[in-house]
Length: 396
Image (cartoon, rainbow, N blue to C red; front, side, top):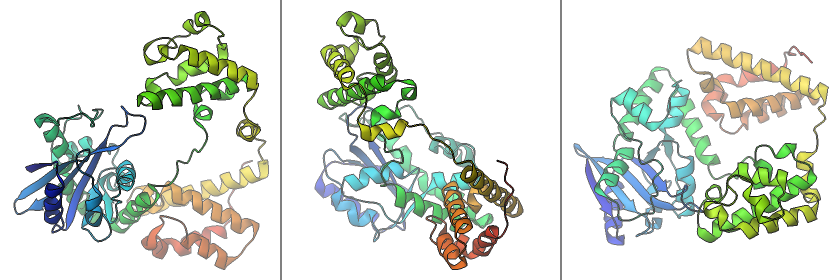
Protein backbone atom coordinates (compact mmCIF):
# COMPACT_ATOMS: atom_id res chain seq x y z
CA UNK A 1 0.00 0.00 0.00
CA UNK A 2 1.10 3.54 -0.80
CA UNK A 3 0.06 5.60 2.24
CA UNK A 4 -0.15 9.40 2.20
CA UNK A 5 -0.85 11.51 5.28
CA UNK A 6 -2.82 14.58 4.20
CA UNK A 7 -2.44 17.66 6.40
CA UNK A 8 -2.90 20.62 4.03
CA UNK A 9 -5.52 21.96 1.63
CA UNK A 10 -3.14 21.60 -1.30
CA UNK A 11 -2.42 17.98 -0.53
CA UNK A 12 -6.15 17.30 -0.14
CA UNK A 13 -6.87 18.82 -3.54
CA UNK A 14 -4.24 16.58 -5.15
CA UNK A 15 -5.63 13.48 -3.41
CA UNK A 16 -9.18 14.31 -4.49
CA UNK A 17 -8.09 14.59 -8.12
CA UNK A 18 -6.34 11.20 -7.97
CA UNK A 19 -9.21 9.45 -6.21
CA UNK A 20 -11.81 10.87 -8.62
CA UNK A 21 -10.32 8.78 -11.43
CA UNK A 22 -11.18 5.52 -9.63
CA UNK A 23 -14.36 3.50 -10.20
CA UNK A 24 -14.68 2.67 -6.51
CA UNK A 25 -13.38 4.26 -3.36
CA UNK A 26 -12.97 2.64 0.04
CA UNK A 27 -13.94 5.03 2.85
CA UNK A 28 -13.67 4.98 6.62
CA UNK A 29 -13.92 7.69 9.25
CA UNK A 30 -12.67 7.97 12.81
CA UNK A 31 -14.04 10.13 15.60
CA UNK A 32 -13.45 10.74 19.29
CA UNK A 33 -16.86 9.63 20.50
CA UNK A 34 -15.58 7.84 23.61
CA UNK A 35 -13.55 10.85 24.64
CA UNK A 36 -15.61 13.99 23.90
CA UNK A 37 -19.05 15.34 24.76
CA UNK A 38 -19.92 15.67 21.07
CA UNK A 39 -18.01 13.34 18.71
CA UNK A 40 -16.27 15.02 15.80
CA UNK A 41 -14.67 13.74 12.63
CA UNK A 42 -10.95 13.42 13.37
CA UNK A 43 -9.55 11.28 10.55
CA UNK A 44 -10.85 10.23 7.13
CA UNK A 45 -9.29 7.35 5.21
CA UNK A 46 -9.67 6.76 1.48
CA UNK A 47 -8.29 3.92 -0.64
CA UNK A 48 -8.39 3.19 -4.36
CA UNK A 49 -6.35 1.20 -6.88
CA UNK A 50 -3.64 2.95 -8.86
CA UNK A 51 -2.18 0.42 -11.23
CA UNK A 52 -0.95 -2.54 -9.21
CA UNK A 53 -0.83 -0.49 -6.00
CA UNK A 54 -3.54 0.37 -3.50
CA UNK A 55 -3.29 4.08 -2.80
CA UNK A 56 -4.35 5.11 0.71
CA UNK A 57 -4.90 8.66 1.90
CA UNK A 58 -5.18 9.31 5.64
CA UNK A 59 -6.64 12.79 6.00
CA UNK A 60 -6.12 14.74 9.20
CA UNK A 61 -9.53 16.38 9.33
CA UNK A 62 -8.51 18.47 12.33
CA UNK A 63 -5.89 20.14 10.15
CA UNK A 64 -7.88 20.45 6.92
CA UNK A 65 -11.67 20.57 6.35
CA UNK A 66 -13.22 17.85 4.20
CA UNK A 67 -15.78 20.04 2.45
CA UNK A 68 -13.67 20.04 -0.76
CA UNK A 69 -14.31 16.27 -0.89
CA UNK A 70 -18.09 16.75 -1.20
CA UNK A 71 -18.09 16.18 -5.01
CA UNK A 72 -15.96 13.06 -4.58
CA UNK A 73 -18.06 11.55 -1.79
CA UNK A 74 -21.38 12.67 -3.23
CA UNK A 75 -23.55 11.54 -6.12
CA UNK A 76 -21.10 12.62 -8.82
CA UNK A 77 -18.14 10.71 -7.41
CA UNK A 78 -17.20 7.04 -7.69
CA UNK A 79 -19.00 4.29 -5.80
CA UNK A 80 -18.03 4.41 -2.14
CA UNK A 81 -17.44 1.19 -0.18
CA UNK A 82 -17.69 1.31 3.61
CA UNK A 83 -18.12 -1.16 6.43
CA UNK A 84 -21.12 -0.27 8.61
CA UNK A 85 -21.72 3.14 7.10
CA UNK A 86 -24.24 4.67 9.51
CA UNK A 87 -21.89 6.47 11.89
CA UNK A 88 -19.50 7.48 9.12
CA UNK A 89 -22.39 8.93 7.10
CA UNK A 90 -23.43 11.07 10.06
CA UNK A 91 -19.90 12.32 10.65
CA UNK A 92 -19.38 13.21 7.01
CA UNK A 93 -22.74 14.95 6.69
CA UNK A 94 -21.96 17.04 9.76
CA UNK A 95 -18.54 17.86 8.26
CA UNK A 96 -20.06 19.08 4.98
CA UNK A 97 -19.28 16.12 2.73
CA UNK A 98 -22.36 13.85 2.70
CA UNK A 99 -22.17 10.36 1.24
CA UNK A 100 -23.99 9.06 -1.83
CA UNK A 101 -23.65 5.97 -4.04
CA UNK A 102 -22.49 3.87 -1.10
CA UNK A 103 -22.06 0.12 -0.66
CA UNK A 104 -21.77 -1.47 2.78
CA UNK A 105 -19.83 -4.70 3.25
CA UNK A 106 -21.50 -5.30 6.61
CA UNK A 107 -24.90 -5.30 4.88
CA UNK A 108 -23.65 -7.73 2.25
CA UNK A 109 -22.25 -10.03 4.93
CA UNK A 110 -25.50 -9.96 6.89
CA UNK A 111 -27.64 -10.79 3.86
CA UNK A 112 -25.20 -13.54 2.93
CA UNK A 113 -25.88 -15.09 6.33
CA UNK A 114 -22.54 -14.52 8.05
CA UNK A 115 -22.70 -14.91 11.81
CA UNK A 116 -19.71 -12.60 12.39
CA UNK A 117 -19.98 -9.44 10.33
CA UNK A 118 -17.28 -7.27 11.94
CA UNK A 119 -14.57 -6.01 9.59
CA UNK A 120 -11.71 -7.85 11.28
CA UNK A 121 -13.67 -11.11 11.33
CA UNK A 122 -14.58 -10.84 7.64
CA UNK A 123 -11.06 -9.90 6.54
CA UNK A 124 -9.72 -12.91 8.42
CA UNK A 125 -12.34 -15.45 7.29
CA UNK A 126 -12.74 -14.33 3.68
CA UNK A 127 -9.36 -12.90 2.71
CA UNK A 128 -6.99 -14.38 5.28
CA UNK A 129 -5.96 -10.87 6.32
CA UNK A 130 -5.20 -10.14 9.96
CA UNK A 131 -6.37 -6.69 11.04
CA UNK A 132 -5.64 -5.60 14.61
CA UNK A 133 -8.42 -4.13 16.74
CA UNK A 134 -6.24 -2.60 19.45
CA UNK A 135 -6.95 1.01 18.44
CA UNK A 136 -10.72 0.75 18.08
CA UNK A 137 -11.24 2.90 21.18
CA UNK A 138 -8.35 5.27 20.57
CA UNK A 139 -8.88 9.01 20.93
CA UNK A 140 -8.33 10.05 17.32
CA UNK A 141 -8.24 13.73 18.22
CA UNK A 142 -4.77 13.22 19.70
CA UNK A 143 -1.82 14.39 17.66
CA UNK A 144 0.59 13.61 16.15
CA UNK A 145 -0.59 10.54 14.26
CA UNK A 146 2.17 7.99 14.82
CA UNK A 147 3.49 5.56 12.19
CA UNK A 148 1.76 2.68 14.01
CA UNK A 149 -1.54 4.55 14.01
CA UNK A 150 -1.09 5.42 10.35
CA UNK A 151 -0.66 1.74 9.51
CA UNK A 152 -3.75 0.85 11.53
CA UNK A 153 -5.83 3.50 9.77
CA UNK A 154 -4.65 2.30 6.38
CA UNK A 155 -5.62 -1.24 7.32
CA UNK A 156 -9.23 -0.15 7.80
CA UNK A 157 -9.55 0.66 4.09
CA UNK A 158 -6.65 -1.06 2.36
CA UNK A 159 -8.46 -4.39 1.88
CA UNK A 160 -12.03 -3.11 1.80
CA UNK A 161 -12.38 -3.14 -2.00
CA UNK A 162 -11.08 -6.71 -2.15
CA UNK A 163 -13.62 -7.71 0.50
CA UNK A 164 -16.34 -5.97 -1.49
CA UNK A 165 -15.33 -7.92 -4.60
CA UNK A 166 -15.39 -11.19 -2.67
CA UNK A 167 -18.80 -10.59 -1.11
CA UNK A 168 -20.21 -9.30 -4.39
CA UNK A 169 -19.17 -12.52 -6.11
CA UNK A 170 -20.95 -14.54 -3.44
CA UNK A 171 -23.99 -12.33 -3.79
CA UNK A 172 -23.99 -12.83 -7.55
CA UNK A 173 -23.80 -16.61 -7.12
CA UNK A 174 -26.96 -16.49 -5.00
CA UNK A 175 -28.62 -13.91 -7.25
CA UNK A 176 -29.09 -11.45 -4.37
CA UNK A 177 -27.06 -8.47 -5.58
CA UNK A 178 -30.20 -6.39 -6.12
CA UNK A 179 -31.40 -7.06 -2.58
CA UNK A 180 -28.00 -6.13 -1.15
CA UNK A 181 -28.01 -2.88 -3.15
CA UNK A 182 -31.52 -2.04 -1.93
CA UNK A 183 -30.55 -2.61 1.70
CA UNK A 184 -27.39 -0.50 1.33
CA UNK A 185 -29.46 2.34 -0.14
CA UNK A 186 -32.00 2.03 2.68
CA UNK A 187 -29.29 2.08 5.34
CA UNK A 188 -27.74 5.20 3.84
CA UNK A 189 -31.13 6.92 3.50
CA UNK A 190 -31.92 6.33 7.17
CA UNK A 191 -28.45 7.11 8.53
CA UNK A 192 -29.33 10.72 9.26
CA UNK A 193 -32.76 10.01 10.74
CA UNK A 194 -33.33 10.95 14.39
CA UNK A 195 -32.79 8.05 16.80
CA UNK A 196 -35.79 5.75 17.10
CA UNK A 197 -35.86 6.21 20.85
CA UNK A 198 -36.56 9.91 21.22
CA UNK A 199 -37.11 9.79 24.97
CA UNK A 200 -35.01 12.08 27.20
CA UNK A 201 -31.85 10.60 28.69
CA UNK A 202 -33.31 9.86 32.14
CA UNK A 203 -36.22 7.91 30.64
CA UNK A 204 -33.81 5.57 28.87
CA UNK A 205 -31.93 4.53 31.99
CA UNK A 206 -32.50 0.89 32.88
CA UNK A 207 -34.56 0.69 36.07
CA UNK A 208 -36.31 4.05 35.78
CA UNK A 209 -39.66 2.28 35.46
CA UNK A 210 -39.39 1.01 39.05
CA UNK A 211 -39.04 4.52 40.50
CA UNK A 212 -41.92 6.48 41.96
CA UNK A 213 -42.76 9.97 40.71
CA UNK A 214 -40.27 11.71 42.99
CA UNK A 215 -37.55 9.26 42.06
CA UNK A 216 -38.12 9.95 38.37
CA UNK A 217 -38.01 13.69 39.06
CA UNK A 218 -34.72 13.32 40.92
CA UNK A 219 -33.26 11.19 38.16
CA UNK A 220 -34.32 13.77 35.58
CA UNK A 221 -32.58 16.56 37.47
CA UNK A 222 -29.47 14.43 37.97
CA UNK A 223 -29.25 13.69 34.24
CA UNK A 224 -29.53 17.40 33.47
CA UNK A 225 -26.68 18.09 35.90
CA UNK A 226 -24.60 15.35 34.33
CA UNK A 227 -25.14 16.74 30.81
CA UNK A 228 -24.00 20.18 31.97
CA UNK A 229 -20.95 18.73 33.71
CA UNK A 230 -19.98 16.60 30.71
CA UNK A 231 -20.33 19.56 28.36
CA UNK A 232 -18.19 21.74 30.62
CA UNK A 233 -15.24 19.32 30.60
CA UNK A 234 -15.91 17.94 27.08
CA UNK A 235 -16.28 14.26 27.92
CA UNK A 236 -19.11 11.77 27.33
CA UNK A 237 -21.68 11.85 30.13
CA UNK A 238 -20.90 8.31 31.29
CA UNK A 239 -17.35 9.41 32.13
CA UNK A 240 -18.68 11.93 34.64
CA UNK A 241 -20.99 9.54 36.51
CA UNK A 242 -22.61 6.26 35.49
CA UNK A 243 -26.28 5.49 34.96
CA UNK A 244 -26.17 2.98 37.80
CA UNK A 245 -24.92 5.60 40.24
CA UNK A 246 -27.55 8.11 39.13
CA UNK A 247 -30.27 5.51 39.60
CA UNK A 248 -29.08 4.73 43.12
CA UNK A 249 -29.03 8.44 43.92
CA UNK A 250 -32.61 8.71 42.68
CA UNK A 251 -33.60 5.87 45.02
CA UNK A 252 -31.71 7.03 48.13
CA UNK A 253 -32.00 10.80 47.54
CA UNK A 254 -29.16 11.88 49.83
CA UNK A 255 -29.44 15.34 51.35
CA UNK A 256 -25.84 15.87 52.45
CA UNK A 257 -22.27 14.92 51.61
CA UNK A 258 -22.28 11.97 53.99
CA UNK A 259 -25.33 10.48 52.30
CA UNK A 260 -23.83 11.11 48.90
CA UNK A 261 -20.57 9.41 49.90
CA UNK A 262 -22.54 6.29 50.80
CA UNK A 263 -23.48 5.87 47.13
CA UNK A 264 -20.71 4.12 45.23
CA UNK A 265 -19.17 6.27 42.51
CA UNK A 266 -20.89 9.51 43.53
CA UNK A 267 -17.87 11.23 45.08
CA UNK A 268 -14.90 9.93 43.10
CA UNK A 269 -13.19 11.13 39.93
CA UNK A 270 -15.10 13.68 37.87
CA UNK A 271 -18.25 12.97 39.88
CA UNK A 272 -16.43 13.99 43.04
CA UNK A 273 -15.80 17.43 41.58
CA UNK A 274 -19.58 18.01 41.31
CA UNK A 275 -20.75 16.99 44.76
CA UNK A 276 -22.73 20.16 45.37
CA UNK A 277 -24.29 19.86 41.92
CA UNK A 278 -25.59 16.36 42.67
CA UNK A 279 -27.03 17.51 46.00
CA UNK A 280 -28.75 20.47 44.33
CA UNK A 281 -30.18 18.16 41.66
CA UNK A 282 -31.54 15.75 44.27
CA UNK A 283 -33.13 18.63 46.20
CA UNK A 284 -34.63 20.10 43.02
CA UNK A 285 -36.11 16.73 42.05
CA UNK A 286 -37.64 16.28 45.48
CA UNK A 287 -39.16 19.74 45.22
CA UNK A 288 -40.54 18.87 41.75
CA UNK A 289 -42.32 15.85 43.19
CA UNK A 290 -42.70 14.32 39.76
CA UNK A 291 -41.62 14.73 36.16
CA UNK A 292 -43.41 17.23 33.88
CA UNK A 293 -46.92 16.18 32.85
CA UNK A 294 -45.83 15.89 29.21
CA UNK A 295 -43.29 13.23 30.24
CA UNK A 296 -45.61 11.27 32.50
CA UNK A 297 -47.33 9.65 29.52
CA UNK A 298 -44.11 7.74 28.84
CA UNK A 299 -44.60 5.85 32.09
CA UNK A 300 -48.35 5.36 31.93
CA UNK A 301 -49.29 1.66 32.01
CA UNK A 302 -50.26 0.31 28.61
CA UNK A 303 -53.59 -1.46 28.58
CA UNK A 304 -53.40 -3.88 25.66
CA UNK A 305 -56.22 -4.18 23.19
CA UNK A 306 -56.42 -7.97 23.06
CA UNK A 307 -58.14 -8.03 19.68
CA UNK A 308 -55.63 -5.68 18.04
CA UNK A 309 -52.75 -7.48 19.71
CA UNK A 310 -53.95 -10.87 18.50
CA UNK A 311 -54.48 -9.52 14.99
CA UNK A 312 -50.94 -8.14 14.83
CA UNK A 313 -49.38 -11.29 16.24
CA UNK A 314 -51.28 -13.39 13.72
CA UNK A 315 -50.16 -11.26 10.78
CA UNK A 316 -46.58 -11.22 12.08
CA UNK A 317 -46.58 -15.00 12.30
CA UNK A 318 -48.03 -15.24 8.80
CA UNK A 319 -45.41 -12.93 7.29
CA UNK A 320 -42.63 -14.69 9.19
CA UNK A 321 -43.73 -18.12 7.99
CA UNK A 322 -43.95 -16.94 4.38
CA UNK A 323 -40.53 -15.32 4.59
CA UNK A 324 -38.90 -18.43 6.03
CA UNK A 325 -40.50 -20.68 3.44
CA UNK A 326 -39.40 -18.42 0.59
CA UNK A 327 -35.86 -18.17 1.98
CA UNK A 328 -35.67 -21.96 2.16
CA UNK A 329 -36.97 -22.27 -1.39
CA UNK A 330 -34.36 -19.84 -2.71
CA UNK A 331 -31.56 -21.05 -0.45
CA UNK A 332 -30.91 -17.57 0.95
CA UNK A 333 -31.04 -15.79 4.29
CA UNK A 334 -34.51 -14.65 5.37
CA UNK A 335 -33.27 -11.04 5.39
CA UNK A 336 -32.78 -11.29 1.64
CA UNK A 337 -36.45 -12.10 1.15
CA UNK A 338 -37.70 -9.43 3.53
CA UNK A 339 -35.56 -7.36 5.92
CA UNK A 340 -37.02 -6.94 9.38
CA UNK A 341 -37.94 -3.29 8.85
CA UNK A 342 -39.81 -4.23 5.66
CA UNK A 343 -41.62 -7.04 7.44
CA UNK A 344 -42.88 -4.60 10.08
CA UNK A 345 -44.16 -2.21 7.41
CA UNK A 346 -45.79 -5.08 5.54
CA UNK A 347 -47.66 -6.17 8.67
CA UNK A 348 -48.90 -2.60 9.08
CA UNK A 349 -50.13 -2.61 5.47
CA UNK A 350 -51.92 -5.94 5.91
CA UNK A 351 -53.63 -4.81 9.10
CA UNK A 352 -54.74 -1.59 7.42
CA UNK A 353 -56.17 -3.72 4.61
CA UNK A 354 -57.98 -5.91 7.15
CA UNK A 355 -59.62 -2.81 8.59
CA UNK A 356 -60.47 -1.27 5.20
CA UNK A 357 -60.05 -3.66 2.25
CA UNK A 358 -58.83 -1.87 -0.87
CA UNK A 359 -56.66 -3.78 -3.34
CA UNK A 360 -55.26 -0.65 -4.96
CA UNK A 361 -54.39 0.89 -1.60
CA UNK A 362 -52.68 -2.33 -0.51
CA UNK A 363 -50.67 -2.48 -3.73
CA UNK A 364 -49.58 1.14 -3.26
CA UNK A 365 -48.69 0.52 0.39
CA UNK A 366 -46.52 -2.46 -0.52
CA UNK A 367 -44.81 -0.56 -3.33
CA UNK A 368 -44.11 2.28 -0.91
CA UNK A 369 -42.41 0.22 1.78
CA UNK A 370 -39.03 1.91 2.37
CA UNK A 371 -36.09 -0.32 1.48
CA UNK A 372 -38.18 -3.01 -0.24
CA UNK A 373 -36.57 -2.18 -3.58
CA UNK A 374 -37.72 -2.68 -7.14
CA UNK A 375 -36.32 -6.21 -7.35
CA UNK A 376 -38.38 -7.44 -4.39
CA UNK A 377 -41.44 -5.60 -5.65
CA UNK A 378 -41.12 -7.25 -9.06
CA UNK A 379 -40.54 -10.66 -7.50
CA UNK A 380 -42.95 -10.61 -4.58
CA UNK A 381 -45.64 -7.99 -5.06
CA UNK A 382 -48.25 -10.54 -6.07
CA UNK A 383 -47.33 -12.94 -3.27
CA UNK A 384 -47.42 -10.19 -0.66
CA UNK A 385 -50.83 -9.00 -1.81
CA UNK A 386 -52.04 -12.59 -1.75
CA UNK A 387 -51.21 -12.78 1.96
CA UNK A 388 -53.99 -10.30 2.60
CA UNK A 389 -56.57 -12.73 1.21
CA UNK A 390 -55.54 -15.44 3.69
CA UNK A 391 -56.94 -14.98 7.18
CA UNK A 392 -54.12 -15.95 9.57
CA UNK A 393 -54.72 -18.15 12.57
CA UNK A 394 -55.10 -16.17 15.77
CA UNK A 395 -54.05 -17.37 19.16
CA UNK A 396 -55.35 -14.72 21.52
